[in-house]
Amino acid sequence: MLNRVIQQLGLKVLSINEVEDSHSSTVYKCTLSNSENVFLKIPFSKLKFQRELEAYGILKGIVSTPVMLDYWSGDEECPGAFLLSELKGKPLTSKATPTVAYQVGVLHAEMHSILPPNNQILTGIQNEFPNWSNFIERQFYSFAEDVKEILDEQLYIKAIEKYEKMKKQLPPPDGPSFVHMDFRPANIIVDNEKVSGMIDFESVRFGSTEIDFTKVYRDFLSVDVNLYNAYQEGYNSIRPLIELENVLPFYSFTDAFNSIGWCNRRGIEKNALFLEENLERLKKWLL
Image 1 (cartoon, rainbow, N blue to C red):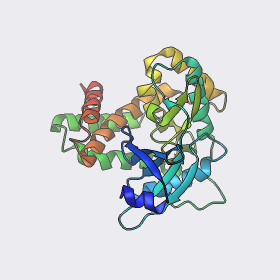
Image 2: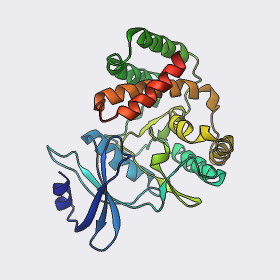
Image 3: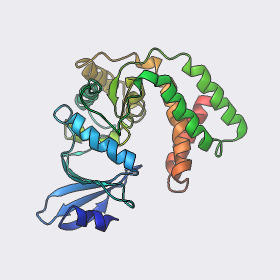
């Protein structure tokens, strides 16, 4: 499939390396014959391809992203592919400074300021905001089918009861906003002290901002209160940040639960480490 994509896009490639921290799509870093570095991305499905394609159009000129240099709409065997420019830098780490955390907050808020377009029909990106609680419920109980095969029965029942109790305590949703759904350090590119932009838009929706803080808090902001404070300051400079303490517990819990289901769907052996991490997180909530 990779060779067919290269052929379709007419690329002259010197070297190819697969990018490891891509959970869903297959991503390759390629050096072309002119020494330029580009990324080839083959999404997991046609729907994810369509979402990403629409996202690049919506985000252009508002939020810093790679430039979509070319794309192929695919065929019966391939869902499609993107040729993307390289954002300068490396993925965000917890060693970043508060200066960087402030910029991450600005970037996140700029994206959340984007409203559903009135003049454009989208076929990939859904507006889930009008029925937000139903969307969350559908996601949770869809993954519950997969989680049931992994957790012992008593722990599974406890998880369902915990979900039902916690969802009643949620505040009204904040939106509608463009939400990334996978806003985590691996998808935020930083060059020294400057945030270059964000990547990976195959899961995006219009919905409530409340879902979008979970992973960046889990993997980055919770490490150091100075990072957390700087991020909040940056976010608030663009739009008001919701009271995160009212939503983070619910979304952190459901993220761990849904991730266990995701691992079962996509292959337990292939995702063993990610599965173990989320089992530990879930048990901390339940035991």
